[in-house]
Structure formats: structure tokens, C-alpha cells
Length: 566
Image (cartoon, rainbow, N blue to C red; front, side, top):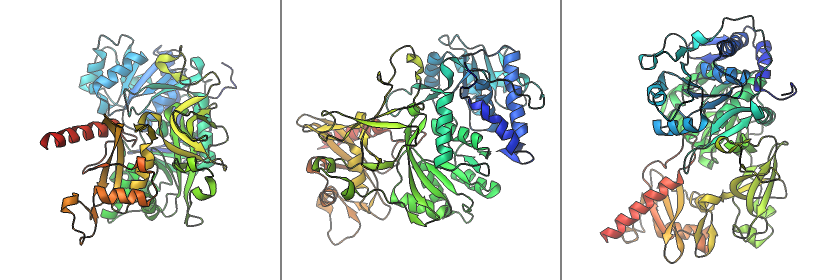
């Protein structure tokens, strides 16, 4: 592989040069300069090579909470031509075993939190590729992981040689990482991502979000997800300081803001909601040092944006839309700019929409792609009657190499290297992407296509609605019937029509919601006829994405129980 190729380890020299005498890494009680951290990476890389533990193109699986040691493993493995595959620490042992059977790794790396995996996975007859397992961190291995094929991180690492760099090695096809999708439906899939994709995504974040060497970046997202990894690599390239907490918690994050003067972080809506709730109950809160927030994993409601501005008055808030297969963010949109003290308004629909057919598919504006990303809409009359609404496709150096278990087969890209995102949307005349919904979530009712995200956006405009999820359930006449699950605000009450008292305020009912949808000009066939009050949090993945299928199953059980009681 030519030396001109991109490699994420190329930027370690910048970390050494910029972070002399000041911390580049803060993780618990450990504070390390750039040189000290890079010495650790190089020592681990030399150990993997000299001990013959890892060869070019082999896979190393890691399951752990966030730490500086976790980042060392990511960089050291890829430095010597290995492929790192982070697993979600929240997975069941069955999910982890399934991933290992696909990946065929030679090394399993765990921390104390995931150390129980070792016995259960290394004793599996279906995983024959494992030669070694190692424990993240210092000191000795825990009792559950002591055996002849175990090594501590310190026993692998070779002593420092004064930050002497060796030429990074490339895995086959330039793959750096196998990152698993969130698995909102079905099993998570291992996505093979190249060094080049990680570098170009990082450059986009540096340019658009504005990461710089004076940033203090709090790792709120887990390093097993593409959002956390790509922002981490961007911060290494920028030369900023990394602050690690094991996993996100509002109390831990608040302490980090105060102790380390954090300037940047990434969030999903659920994280922001937790931070807002914690801040309102806490007597101590200091978010004034934060000057940039990148939100992913779903759009922010007006209430969340206002709450975030109150918490972080000096922060530029940017929202991103993306996916693992595209190495994180495909588009960016500025939500709030503190320099103007004004919310950034989405483009006006009345200014953009010209045809009646498009007005049925307004969707949610998710901003514009950075320069390296190409988007196009592939229209299909089975998806939409509009000539401008269709499948969102993308191509460029950011696109995955393919799914790990299908690299020798056709990936999710067509012959022109276009990746079908699985989302439905349209591009306006200003280059903004409007997201209408997911192909797999589309509801077919009475011969019409309905995208639940559009209906949910209307329902959530009601002041008494805290959240809404719309699903389609089987129906003999319509094919699918639209059901809306509605979570209501604290001071509001859901009532049956027969129990409704017109003199009472703050009431919600099926009739009220139907009339509200009509008032908001939602097309008749899209208005839910059935409403189900939802009295608990909606099920989410670890990245904050909705598990719509779980909601659908619960709705069907609820309606079956309701019908049987009648």
C-alpha cells in the first residue's frame, strides 16, 4: 500500500507536537501529555508486532467502557495493520458470540466491566480463531480471565523508545474498523470502514463543527459507535484534549464540565434531555465553557433546543444526519449560533415547495452535505407519487467498503458505487436534504404510503404531547391501520371520549388529536384513527434511535387484550 494513503495513525505526531507540557488525555486520575499518550500507543503496537500476536489484516475485538486505554488499543491495532472491531458492552452474550463467529478475531480485549465475557466466549466451540485475550489497563488480570492464553496490557506493551515512529501498516482494502450498526431491526451488522473514510469524515467535522487544538472534548458517546469513534479521530487530528468518562451519565458529565472546562461534546436527544433534567434539579451547574455541541441520532425538538441553550449559552449547536455505513454524518445543519443569539430557522416550506404532490411529503430538514459527500434522490413510483421524493443515495470516499461478512459479494452499493441509505427524502433548490422517513418503516394503508415520521412531527406540535410514535398494524381492509402512541406532558390528562369534561383544561383524547391533525392540514388518510396513551419511555437503542418494532409488538398485544375484553 502506498505511503500516500490515509492512515489514522499519521496524526499522532501532531498530538505530540501540540500537547507538550499540557494534558492531551484526562481519564479518571490519569492525566497524560500528547507525548506520554503516544508513547503508550507505540509501545503497545511494538508489543503486538514483536510478540507475534497480530498480523496484517487480522481482527481484534474490544469490549469495554470508554477510557484512554480503549483509545490506545484502537490506535495500536490499526497502526500495525490490524482491524479493530469494537463491540457494544450492553450486548447479551448471545449477541457477542454471534458477532465473533462472523468476525473470526484472533484477540479479544476486555475491561473489568466485560471480563465475564471471556470465559463464556473463549469456551465456545464455534469460535476457534481466538489465540489470546487481554485485559485493558494496568495491574493483573481478574480471576475470571486468568489462563495460559491471557496477557495484561502492560505485559504486551514494550518500554518507551522516545516516541520513535514506525511506518503505519495497512490492512487489506485499507480497512481500519469494523463498526456494528445499532440494530433497530434484526441483528446488528458489521460495517467495514476504511482509514480514508475516517480521515475524510474527521476533516468534515473539523471544518463544519470547528474542532481545534484548544478544544477540551468530553467523550459522551461510546467508542463502540461510529459517532463516538469519528468524533474522537477528528479531535486527534485537531490536536485537542480528550476527557474520558466510562459511560454517559448526567452527573458524571456535569462534574467533567466543572473540573476540566469542557468545550465540546456530542449528544443524542436522550442525552440532552437527561442533562436538562439533571441541571434543573441540581444546585451546581456550569456549562458556560462549552462552545460547540454536535447532535446526532435524531432531530431535536424545540423544547430540547431551548433547554440546551439555557444549559450551554455559549455553545454553537449543530445537528447531523448520518449512518454507520457512511462513516457517520452525511449532512449538517446549524441549529443555534450564540454569536447572533438566534435560532437558525429551517428553510420555509412555502418558499421551497412548488407542487401539490410535494406538500404531502414535507419531512424534516437535516441540512446540507459537506463538500466530499454526494447525494442524489432515486425516485420510484412505488415509494412516492411525487417526482422529487425517493430513496436517498450517497457516494464518495466516506462510504463503507462493505459488510464484513459480504465483502466478496455485492454490498449495499450499486454498480455506480451509490449507497442506498434506506431513507426516503428530497433535495430542495437550496441543496438542503429533507428526510421523510425510512423505507422499512413505511406504512401501506388503503393503497397509500404513509411515513410515520411525518405524522409524528405533526402530533408532537401539540403543546400537551411530549412524544409520539406511529406504527402500522395488520388490517384486513386497509392492509395496515395507523396507530399513534402518545406520551403526554406531566400536567395533561388522557381521557376517553365518554369521560371527557369540556370544562376541564389540559385534556387529550383521540378526538382532540384527530382534530388537531386536521387543523395542521395533515392529509386525511395519514391521520391516525387509533390512539394509545404511552406511559413509559419509548424503547431506544444505545445511540438513542427508536426501536419501532418493539413499539409495534406492544401495540398489537395491547389491542388484542383490549379486543378480548370487549
